[in-house]
Amino acid sequence: MDLTPYGGVEPDEAWVEEVRKLARERDAVLLAHNYQAPAIQDIADHTGDSLALSRIAAASDASTIVFCGVHFMAETAKILSPDKTVLIPDARAGCSLADSITGAQLREWKAQHPGAVVVAYVNTTAEVKAETDICCTSSNAVDVVTSIPADREVLFGPDQFLGAHVKRKTGRENMHIWAGECHVHAGINGPELAQRAAEHPDADLFIHPECGCATSALYLAGEGAVPADKVKILSTGDMVQEARATKAKSVLVATEVGMLHQLRKAAPGIDFRAVNDRASCAYMKMITPAALLRALRDGADEVRVDPETAARARASVQRMIEIGQPGGGE
Ligand code: SF4
Image 1 (cartoon, rainbow, N blue to C red):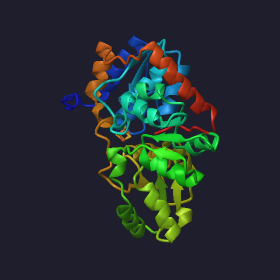
Image 2: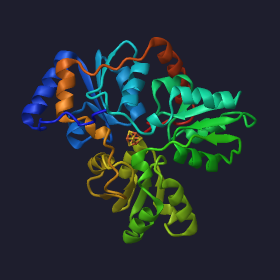
Image 3: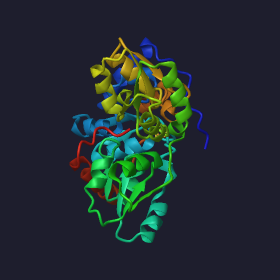
Image 4: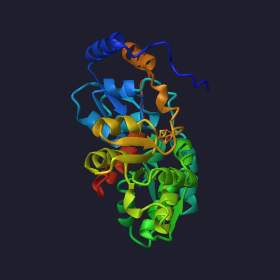
């Protein structure tokens, strides 16, 4: 598939006016994920985590939702708002983590473990959510797994790093973990983190548990290589809150670099730096100014989920919302 983003449009004043006018005409609310390019975050009506945005979408009076994020996120908004029109500016914006398990693969895994409870991180397709018992976010994954009777096997996916984090926290032996990963988070590794921490000894460390570095960071903290009180494992939504609360003058951030824009806006006095400047999600950046204009002009690309799959997927998302503090997901 050709993944060249739609281009040729600068996010200037004229673009801002045109986007606002078209959004009004279409009765659309514009939502942008924290990992979107700054111009897209700035023009959106709301920015946030995937789940927080889906809730805003469901509560909105607007008849159309324009979801500036990746496809599974727009699908989740459609699952929670089946009567609304959901548009994604570029339907090719996928997710390597969501793509690491298909509905067919999950059905086969379930067949190998009859009676197991399936827990899936929100970064999954609607088809996988429909095969899932309970969805989870990074904020409530431990609570979700703890809520399952100890004698039941658990199938956890698709993020192997979040799975390792939950397994360690719960000490659960009968938990099987799918070997999926996000190409961006997997690129943030332990040695790089240790080096950056040594270069900035006074900095707090904000780590997203979907990052490949989380296990290493906790290990390093335990070894004393990184002061344990400096390490904060946070969902992206909690990062913004912690940015406002921390007394630190500088913070190293281990997640997708788009998150820095929100953090710098939330706490302009703090020096936020990425652990890895190359941790940028190419799929997220496919939502360009040109793509957003196209979505509003042409009503494309529309996200559809068949009603039966949506109903089953909705049940697993609802269970997630009922357990612990689900926060906002990625
Ligand atoms: S950063 Fe990773 S998990 Fe997030 S949307 Fe991109 S590929 Fe998916």
